[in-house]
Length: 317
Image (cartoon, rainbow, N blue to C red):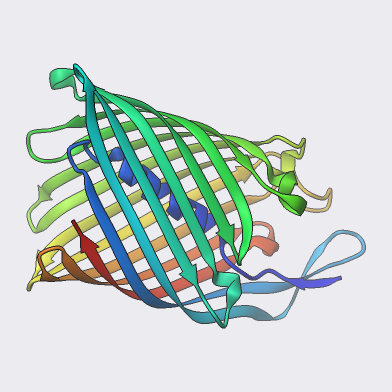
């Protein structure tokens, strides 16, 4: 039996979706806005060629498997809140992200999410919110996952323009057809800190810590895992351009092994993000992004490296 691991890096895309979703949830309620984006990019993924022997042992083969191709993408997201009664407000956040790669359909991706919540102020102690989150994910042109969860968060805005966020999320992940074995229940705890001018020469900094527990609902402990992710990003405006750099580190450990001859899977991923944004006019920004993700695993099947370079025009209202 010979096979290659290739296609969209699902774990990384799921993490990115989590980062984007959490960022929109974590923003102060007064930051209502609408953002649209259209862009083009080029991405590649490499992974080892392996062979599964009759004894269930993974064997490395000569060479590597590589996918590469260009894509176009479009994104629209927004937030809005309304006063209901007293200090209680209704907040709505939504996001739709579509990516299409005509020559490399394994990179096709769609993410749609909607998050209604009730929020109330605690005066100088910030505000709390209780809401739900719905998410639909397609990968490689096919349905991958539906998510429905309950979220509770606390947000505190400081006088310097920064804020703190603590958010807990408990939800169900559902799949279709052959992927139903991936059905799971997940619990996520997020701690986020956004600071304005934390150091000389740095305009803004973000620190995010995620703790995630995912339990397989179909009785497959080798698909249950614990993971943590630390994400740090810095931003500075220089020569009329807003420069930003980010670094993310993630570790995941699964509960059991797939085969007796294989170790319990452990992954460690590093992500580097670099970006430059040029304001063309009020509410009009040209942005260039580079992302490099390297996942190391003690099971050769899951080792891979993913890279993407993209250019996008962002419109905000």
